[in-house]
Length: 140
Image (cartoon, rainbow, N blue to C red; front, side):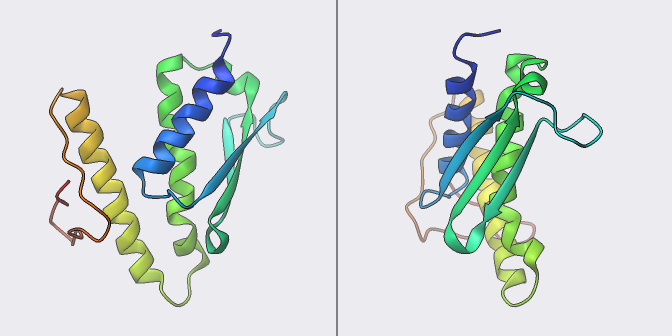
């Protein structure tokens, strides 16, 4: 178990917050010394308030520490993605536009991440750049 597991996981949360375009969001992490009261499989739970650009991620410390460290970025990304998708879950007005924004944010992030893993230089587009549409990859 790494001594700085909390710091390491929180850095992954922050990286995904930025990569997914949530730069105006405040995302707090609360560490729980127990399992969640579900069937024991949940590692973390996100409580996003998308209208206010804030979220709380609760992490079951025993469940996270039971995973290999290389899986922590995936857990962090999954929880932060709940912030991206929160407006869709509420339904109602603006759902389709929010879904498009989410698809764009996710595809840009995954594209950048893939390229970084391949050692390629990644050019980041300024805010308001090209939007992805169905069947098209966003430019980054």
